[in-house]
Image (cartoon, rainbow, N blue to C red):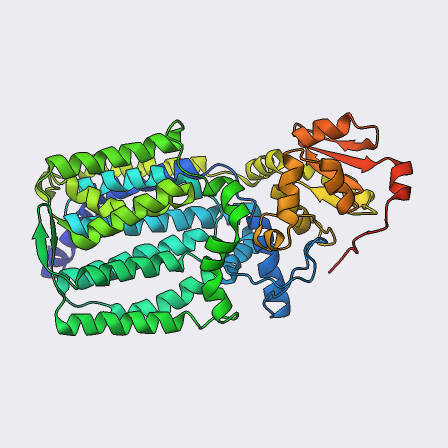
Length: 510
């Protein structure tokens, strides 16, 4: 054997062992299992009704090069001023749809979820240095975050939030960090979703906690140096100024406050704004989180940093008050929970079992490959949730007057028929300002429904088959059923009554 051969031959063996040990390690296996759990929970359906008008908004922006500034989707608030606070996050969903259809939308939403929890796993490990405890904390965060699983623009906001936590933890642990990342991060955030305000609260909590020093039982605070405080102040100021780099100016920055103080009906009646119900599965997971935090505080010797305590309290208050923020609570609590579970044995490379890890990784990947929903399956889930059954009828029998539609269907109807003008859709905000959403809620409660129908000169009603309003109209001789499907039913006002009604037919088309 030549010297050259003796030098070359061992290299493939060493290289194979190196890559097996690197990619078939226990931490990678835990991350794969975490990803499989998130995938398993999030793979079903396209349950978010906002996705349809998000696609429509993005299509308009890319086709015309102009941002939407007034409503053109409805006949009830047509021409009213409206800003689109999530325009940047809509574009990736639209591109995914253009390239791969419903599968593309689903794949993007799952990719965003996997990115969130992978980055969160890193944050937890960075703080606890215990990959097992970090995985347990992230699994709990996955269960809390299910309220926002789906093709939602807020997922971009949660990615930005985890990136913010990464930057802040790096700064806290090393005394320096990549604070220069924060201004462009907040610039992207404000153009993607109104949750930027949550990130600013987290940044303020982090900064303010370092303005004091002391130890209070299990809580401690370390004061920033003058140099660190100047860096944080500069980063915060630059981040605030970066918020103004958006197509709507100060109005976009004020939108979260507008929602909090003006959209009372939205917050009071839309499902994701309700408080936690401890009787359902999501409430039980939230209760488990509270129990873990309480037990950790009482039994663990872990010393909480002041900013950790403040962030967890903020996250729990937001999540228990509005279930849509349970995702936020899970993200903010996970690093602390990873530390509280520090009693779990740490990972030891020398006793790692690459073959077992490889099997876990392979099983996780196989689960994702086999379980990924097909286009037909996603289409079937859409048809069970939305009035796909009535679309052919509407195409062949265009409505000749105002249509009262179920509000969760407004975006879907307009996306599939751009000429359709809806009564209300899941944007809610603009309809609440004009009083339309309040009238719609009266209809749902059957509170003088006839007067509301007359007020808007409604000629057609398109609602779910088993809705109370549907039952009322089925027994009203003034209305007749012109279409009935498995999901939707379409009523038309009786000819004699329609003839006496005031003409108010919405124009079709943009």
